Length: 406
Image 1 (cartoon, rainbow, N blue to C red):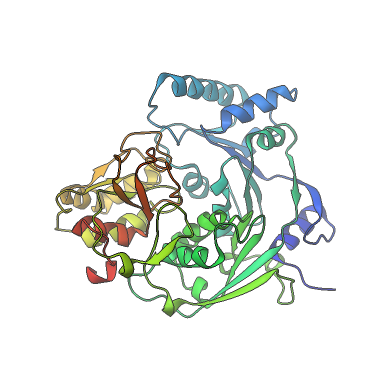
Image 2: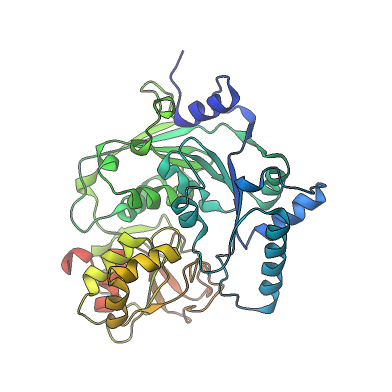
């Protein structure tokens, strides 16, 4: 019998029988999550299905994070209904200022290794960083999960990605994942599971693992999983498992990368675009706004000033991250450098709040998507980068390789 991939192993364990890629299954869900962009529709679907009480209030987590503080009356009324439902159902609820859903889910251990986690947000795949099978679904599917505690899945085929060696100075997890997406393309892993293996990944910080799994969906994948972080032997994929594809990369060959407008797989080394004037730098989102990301920016901007004509906005991933960054002195250093801080949460990433760029403006952002209009203006140009590249760019007012200023 052939060995099993991570996805085949975890689903087989849940079902107490062996499954293989391509099978359609119904599985029990360990935790379900929704945000203010999706919870309202999920609640509506739940009620239309005859739902009166969620299957397990301790395993349902709702967030208000995408449009917080609330920007207008229409969204305020949606928030009001979400708050009322959360109170009636006695589910786990995080209101404004808690932070971005994915960061808070991990900080507060709502997801654990071996869980099947379903979220009405495409970046739910983030939790693969700790060895969960975590997938984003539509609001109607989530409504069904709220009612039954189950979901249907096709067991995904898998891609194995091996990273050898160790990253050079000034290169981070964001650069790795942009490099990989550039190679595999934005639809090259559609509905697949991407497994990250090898010493290169094993040597990374947990924050980099989170960034890499977060952006796995940008290849079209169903889930991503960081194999070096798995501690349970029964979840570790077999050496002889069947993969759709195996890719090998060398960490020492990876350089600071940018994803160029208007597609995430349109990637280039930062060096190739150096000198391009930048109007706005944004450090935030579920991809890159953790303590290490803010520390990387503070290291570059400490005692210096952001370039004239360039503005920098920072939204910490959670209030916990904000408090830690205050304690470490990073916030003061970045404010002194000229950065503007906004509420922990999704911030500028989706463009529903303040900070929207102007027509023709160039943005360097640590977020995960740069399609036309993503940050609220379809006449702006968004480049995706690591926190170090973002901070180096803010310092000089033009695209800058962080290795030049470190």
